Length: 269
Length: 283
Ligand SMILES: Nc1ncnc2c1ncn2[C@@H]1O[C@H](COP(=O)(O)OP(=O)(O)O)[C@@H](O)[C@H]1O
Ligand SMILES: [Mg+2]
Image: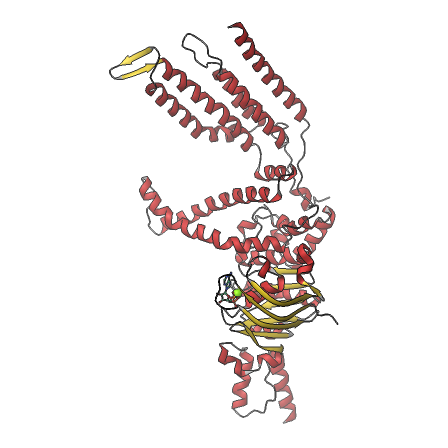
């Protein structure tokens, strides 16, 4: 038998990790971030470096892989890695204090610099990485639906969803307009200034259209019972993949072990 | 008998406006009829629609005096249930999508979701309406990727699916090409056959002459003429108010000037053909 439309709009993921309930994913993200911060406070070697963050970071690509979204996530990590490494380099050379480890003419690496550089870099990589995992493996549709379920105001859920949709539409529309500009001979490549010059005329109609449209949009929603009281039906519903409990348990255990280790070190010293 | 909609001495002024956008409005809308609304730009057509739906003053704020009754009860007493009674389709097709749905099917279903209808029921109703409005093949497309004409049909479908007894449609075709205009009017025709009460603002008088039962003419915030379509649209004096009359009416006027004895000017093709037929037989 042919599928009904309602069946067709459901999201079915083969991968059990990708298919985790969004709330569970969010809990994992929070636990991972807490663990990261705790690990950051454990300083090793004579130079007091947060070295544990480095092996910990291996978990991030591991998560990408078991979720079956490795490529997509790694693409998103590119820009983040660039920023993280840039920050590490700048911090390492700029922050002074502590022993001098290495000098070449006027450039020097000092103990404090290495400490902050390393720790900032891996804090960013770890925490941004886990958020990349969350957002690359969860669609806006799922996140919105989840917000609706958490008894958060449906208005907030609407604003969230429509903003994300708008960004998608804006970026695809601005690409179309940029192409049109290029076809008309307007320069769209080159330095920032040239790009901005090509881009501003494309943005004005987009933004104006958005503002003028919003009044009619509000009324349109109203005409379709947006603020109607009482129970709403949802054609799209979130499903659990069945691995929620185990994943959450593992995450909690790891976090507790890390915390225990941290406390043990405090007592020992 | 209760009218579907009734306005008694309604005057409405937008916030900060110097003068009312609608003055001393008296209107009786009967069940199952299609009312065409015409008037120059700025004459108050859209404002009239907003008043009939309650958007003015509930959304626009401003000052409203007089009484508006829906099926004999005060409009305000319906509260949020009014969207079940009165459907509203706007002029701009592109601002009428919810902006949060990935497929046309979900877009059309959105209002029913808000109403809390059962899932199976929604599926049935939406399919029904998608067939009626000829958008079945768009069902799984993204609403953001539609043309103006397609979007306007989706907008109509999204409102009709709620099965309102009264439909207010404000210039649905002003931004559409002739072909899309025709498909929108096909839908309106079907709605008329279903005995819906329809209030249709439209500049294309030839189409109104064809489809409407009654006409309402606005000028400078006031109704200057209302009544049966043939009577209203054959009134040549309306031209003084910047109102275009149907081609057929203008043609008949020329015929009358040429010496043909015409009592009441025809406004549609069929009427003029009838007239010619009668004259031919008579002679
Ligand atoms: N939101 C608004 N706020 C203030 N004035 C408005 C608003 N909308 C319309 N008007 C004014 O009310 C009058 C009637 O407008 P409108 O009903 O839109 O006319 P129409 O639809 O016939 O073109 C115009 O003078 C217009 O400037
Ligand atoms: Mg208007």
